[in-house]
Length: 215
Image (tube, rainbow, N blue to C red; front, side):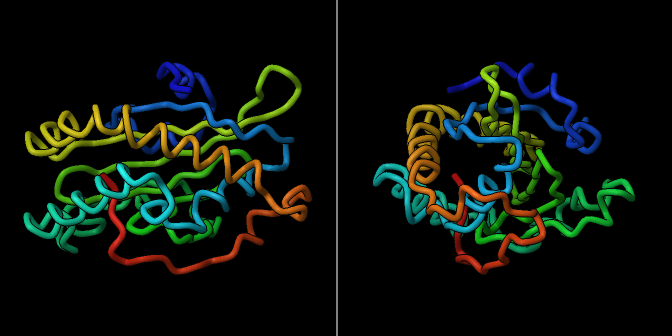
């Protein structure tokens, strides 16, 4: 379910310190009911798989088209990414977050920034946008918790603004509904061991597809 931006801004997230020059593109409630210690399992579910291989055919088609356009126009060249076209938000991390080693997962081209008990952030940059994916673990109003996802972006000039405007209908009508269904199915299909708490430092590091892109 899509949420108003205030659902993100009203939370005491540390990400606010880093993204004052970014805009909130989307906020979504995730159908991932759980307890106060279940957040690392949500992060593992997000980070351990390549969504371009698991979502619906229309979404995979969009992923392939976006990847092809990126190759054609050089949007995803290394010189357009983090620490090249833009500085990584790691440079903005306060000391206490720098001291935490965030888990790295199979979600290229995203790169983890930090992880706390109820918050995880990862970033991406290419020729069109510098973006942040933020996951939080929030009370559900019924004594439990659920996940919440926010997408924050800093478009690269007119190209970035035009790109974000062009893909917005596809994201809202095709990509996000498929992604929400995948998240819900994955959460419901968790193995029995997923019912036990897992510490952030126990999250496995895995390598993903280096050619993966996001539309």
